[in-house]
Length: 327
Image (cartoon, rainbow, N blue to C red; front, side, top):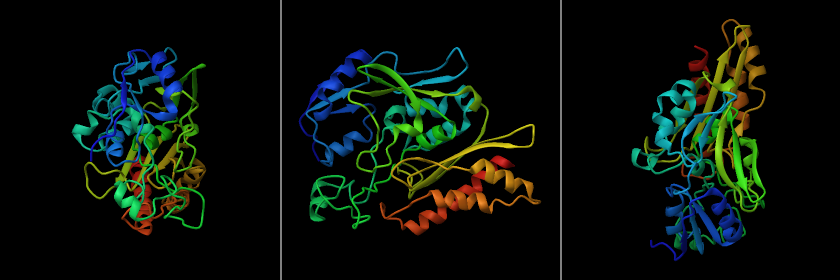
């Protein structure tokens, strides 16, 4: 499967990349690590006239502390750095654990945090060769007019399957978007639209440049649970991230997020209230909390693994994560 013809741009400054992206974006693609984009180009999912390589831009890599104690991570920081940095692993073990389970060692050395957060949604009917997709009449996400997952609707249900997004959602992270009008910060959850065919809310010319982890989230216990067919390389088919702290007052601060089960990463609402009731019982009863997570998951036929099995897995993952972090 050969690559399509394109013009390659290698800007040295973020402002130059933003200007190029604003000008060429309708006929272009951004290249970060390329671990997902390049296979998609070979499958014929995209045929951009322009490819803007972000790899040479100064200031988009590294892990640092802001004056207020928050942590800042450049969008072009490699995944293996997140998994192996000792300080990050101590302060944010959940993010390190999620990063360590991405793909394989080789791909973690190529893939970037920004690329992972902006990962295209995936589906059994979409991530195939051109001939395979043509034989099925294409799909709503690419070249067709029907979603084979939910044929009666007009919504694309391709699943968002990145690993770092749920971990960062659970840690209450924000993202910086650099655009023609300057930079703006927004909560990570606001980056995602919930539509499988247009998963990101980015303005014209905007590029994800940095991630911010709040100082208040440092030191929280974490658990990342991931189900995939193989224990390496494969994307998750059901995964969740839990960040939890037992407070001195006896209460619990907790956030749990899902991935690979919905068209966007999903933060489960109401978990702290549910856990407060669970821990008031003797012995603690996590059934209601597990069911809360289960109701937030919407696994559909976007993979070769049945949706019922993926739903069973996420309930098991929720119980394992809660038990580990509450121990």
